[in-house]
Length: 228
Image 1 (cartoon, rainbow, N blue to C red):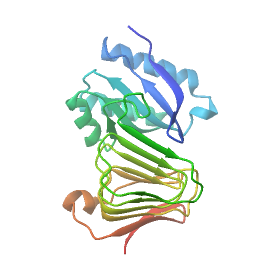
Image 2: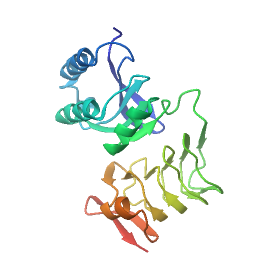
Image 3: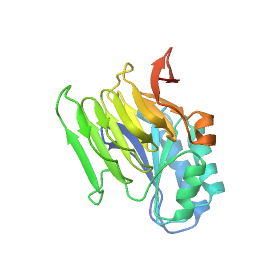
C-alpha cells in the first residue's frame, strides 16, 4: 500500500494542507496511517488550525467513513474544507458534510482554466458564468457578470461582486484583508470566506434556495450577511 501523505501546498494564493490517501488498499489501514501522520506533526506549528483538502482520487468513500475522517482531523485542530474525488458517491458524501468537491486537484495541469492576473488594485471583470472546475485568482476586486457555479472558485484580494447566484467558493480579502466584502444577487454558497474567516451559508439559504441580494462582511471578528 502506498504511503499516506500530509504536506503543505499552495491552493492558489492560500497556504493549506493536502492529505493524500492512496486509492487502493484497506480503508482502516489507511486511517491508521493518517493517525500516524497526524501524531508525527501534532507539535508542528504550521500544521495547527490549518485548512485541509482531502485527496482520495478514484477510491469510493462512504459518508460514514468521510465523516469519521473529518472528525479525526478536527480533533487535531485542523479544518477540512474540500475533497478531491472522482466517485460520485464520495462527492455526494462530501457535499452532505458541507465540504467543497473537486474532480481534480485545483491547480493541476488538467484544470480547465486559471486566471492569475497581477494587476494591483485594478478590478477584473468576468462577463459570463464561472463554470464548475474553473478558478479565478486576482490581486484586486473581481466582478462576475453571471453565476458562480458549484465546483468553481473565485479568489480576490479585494471585494467580490456577483450579479448572479453564488453556489461555488468565493474568498474575498484572500491576502488577509478583513475589510473585503462579498456581494451576490443570490447567496447559495456552501460556505463564505473573508480573509482567514470561514462561515457556513445561512440555514434559510439552504432550505429555500431563494434570497434577495446580500452582502457578506466582517463584524467583530465574524462573517455576517445582510440584505442590500
